[in-house]
Length: 506
Image (cartoon, rainbow, N blue to C red; front, side, top):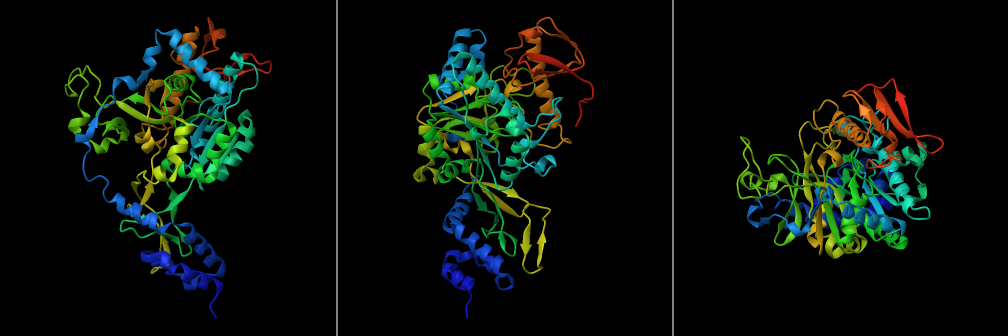
């Protein structure tokens, strides 16, 4: 007599089509394993996976040079515009503070990444780059939000708050939840921290066959930060935003230690121009720098990866010349708007791109990876030493072409972009460089406030004291040496605390 599981399997065999190898070990599985595998099969849209794989074959066939043009000047704004324009700066800040006070703004963190490349098994947001305060990335971000709320409170009555949506993955959700609970949510109201888990998609061999992680488990991976849109709709987060009355959203990645949370300048710029979508950028100064740039293609904005344009196009300068490593270059690169994955979106725009007719048009990108797999013939799990398969990913910025009023806000890289990508053995984008850039910024604030320091002085400033260099007037005339933390005392006033056991090392 056929078992229930075998009957269920027969009913869905047509669905498997060219993926029948998934069942290679079916007869050896225990009943609970069969039930688990059946559940996994039911969750997969095999037609969509197959279609996505076929589309990836067309990726990278040609360069995009002939279709590209740089963004026009009228979409730009820059931190340089504010250097001698206090009124414009305050206009942006007050516009942003008002929207936060009215409950119209939220922030969304992309936190699906593990710290595998950093040599740790926990989520990146839990990583501590060894600041004197020992703040993790999550703590820095939570306290920066608190700091912004405090600034809003100084301008308006009430108790402002910023909903903080955190998109995790199956690999990071549980540990992230535990970490926040263990640290009492870093003082942030847990009712305004909303965690949700992004979708996953099967990992594929180079021929399109689904990779098996074990006899009863399909190898899956998160579908990239562009999987946000389908996940927002399916999880109910988009509905939650609309129910809360959210109109504006800032998105960012977890690994940028310098990220400005709920940046009032960026938010004010976007609201005042009535933008539906915008991006922060840093100036790309060298053609070979591996950073995607914002450009226009067929009258639509998009991010172009450095590998998608020729060296000749990458070397073009705004003034018409060509970049040269010898001698003075003068003008900026024509394609200089380096994307740092900090974006603004109206919720009305977000609602539009989350709908099936647009979300399904977002392309999948291929990431070739070393993916452990189960060899049914050898009956063992193999850990390959070379890439053996692909993970399909969507990118968050692939909605830019659907924007009807796009904007670009240029920021100072030394103040806003220091990603944590590599382990301590690396020389760039590593714990040491993140720590260096963060401490340099704190020292810059203290110097501007009037503090006197030697070259070796270290200053670590709590974000609830200052989020952008404000509120440090008490340092005017103070002499700081050694290692110093600036924190809030129990009476609510800032104070300087000396640290004697910290070493500037990993």
